Length: 382
Ligand SMILES: Cc1ncc(COP(=O)(O)O)c(C=O)c1O
Image (cartoon, rainbow, N blue to C red; front, side):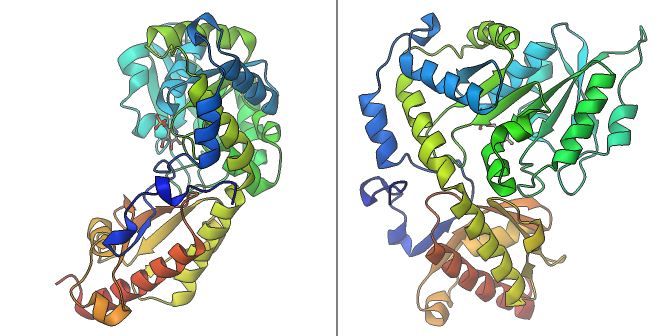
């Protein structure tokens, strides 16, 4: 078991009964191999460009994506913001992006707060893509009254639609629209490697259609911290200045890059396990024929599962019931099982797989879904 945390570093939550934590792929603890690499990392001052481990990581990911250069940054949020700042060099410029994408929904409007850039949204389709006609229609004409469109942002895998993988045909069309209107394309590829695994392609097959990529090490790759922004030499030279201005210039951060190198190597190699576990959960929910909870395995493409809930049951309450221990639970199930997960929409929950999730966790979670689903069907929310 090369890529698994030992008990010593485990979450210490099993003693509360059986706990399955599906909240996110960001909750993982670094593996033994990561901790070893971190303790042995050769470091230097990365603001001076002198950290050999950071340099190795940057070179490695730039090569993987077949781009010129990369920059190690603390978070995906900073990476996306720096990308917007690098592509939109004037205040009052505008970017086109999906209304359910992470950059628009979960990054505090950083582009407006810090970069003076305006977001212009396009409807996100259920598979994580955008309506291309709508996208093109929203590009501003040259008009003194209007902001200037500069950038299109896309997200792959698409988090809010359940970890969906964007088809290459869609990426190709986005590229063609961008080229026609002289725009750049940024990919929020926090989980790009999940997309590559799901499509069984090398990442550059996907990244050939975009100008820049933000890749997270702290999601499915299991690292404690870090993202990389990847693109052309000019773009990364600008990104270096923006990173410093935003306070993201770290010093001996080779200790973090060392973990990322293990993530790229060992974490990447096991992402398929997360996808298999997601399929097991999704199929299990469907086949259970539960009156309240179900899922659509065909839509479960990577490490996220959308758990669909019967309309009369709000997702917040469903999440609470799954995460708590019911009075009659030990008598019925033989033990307590807590399934932690977040509501995604009013009628769905998101279950995210990560390297701590085992096959047994899936079995136990299914037991709890069955138990709570049958209770809700019989008694409603009382
Ligand atoms: C698609 C996507 N992009 C960007 C981010 C931001 O990453 P971070 O939490 O490192 O800022 C996340 C975080 O969950 C994400 O899911």
